Image 1 (cartoon, rainbow, N blue to C red):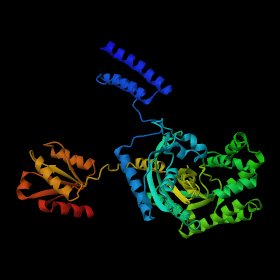
Image 2: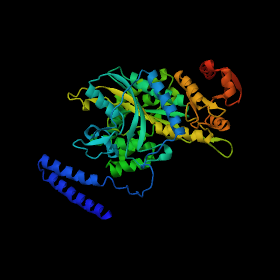
Image 3: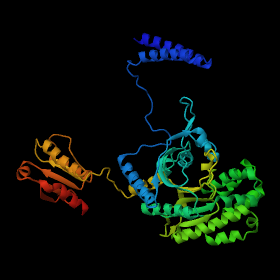
Image 4: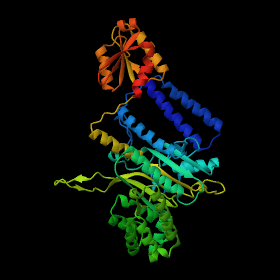
Length: 510
């Protein structure tokens, strides 16, 4: 048998070479199809062979992870709260394909374009996995001729980045986006996006945070005032974007040695990008002689002044910071940009005092991108947009760590009542009671054994934190009652079977 298999494998190799030669020579399609059919017939001969045991290490691909039931309950709780905030602000949900034509994504992400996952040619279309949800939104708006929408989108995106799993940085991860598209008065939608970020983090109770704000026009104006050539704006912006992870000395070296920037120009940039504050800083910069001479810088500062004013009206003054080091490296931003970072828990010193620990990383980011939709519209019609993306993976990591440190064991299902039988031969009655409860919207379950031990059933309720249990035997059924047990207190009460569902609902409400 093994000799026959080897012969078939050799025939497959020869036939495969022939098909490749025909395709390379661009022979007629009918001839190629005929030889492909022969190749498939040969491969089919191997179909009945027993599968060989493959020897490989079972693991998830680099930068990905599995989610156990406890982690999924935490995740769903987080996503439900985020969606509730999106809906409160009038958001409508959309969805787009997980992959796009490569040309849709190309040229939108600056230096980060190298992190896009390209897919193998599947028959004429060159495709890539989506890098974010913003570019697919712009494509969707242009294709559908939509000029205004307030949309949210929660879905997975893919980046061929160096993962840092413990800090919630993956190659496959969820983004939760909220965007406002349409022509409106300056900074009103932008300020609402900042408010949405604040509301989400407050409702998740994840810890102290600060929302950093800046303006792309101000950055460009600052670069111009410092003498950066216009063709280097984007690459220098990408370098400044690394200041949240690298010290200024390292970023300065990159500007000079890798980006070819003059040392004195880099030093001038350094004086600005290390500034942060509020309205006072805006006024100080508006009086700066170098920035006053550049129109883009003045426009950016006036925009920031208005944004800070609106954020103050919404009670956000103590949660925001105007930060000139914030750059966000993506090419499509045109106006306000923002990023939310969690503050680290204060370190407790030996003498009992506390010491501030800075920040632990970004959990949200976004900004205004007024020209992106026009890149896809045949007539170049622009649809101004502003939006924010919540980095939920990092939020999951922080909340998982908190739950683990507190020794919390979250429930992994939502079962409200467990139907338990005390004697043999009562499995059909269990099914009848379950059916009635399910029909009335009660979340219920039972044992899949015909005659389970009562103790085992009650232990299951305690382990799974099911709040109520229905317990019955032959004597209860003769009287038309069941015992309704509170699992935590172990108190039991006789309830008429006809009133069981209503009694369960009443207790769950209380």
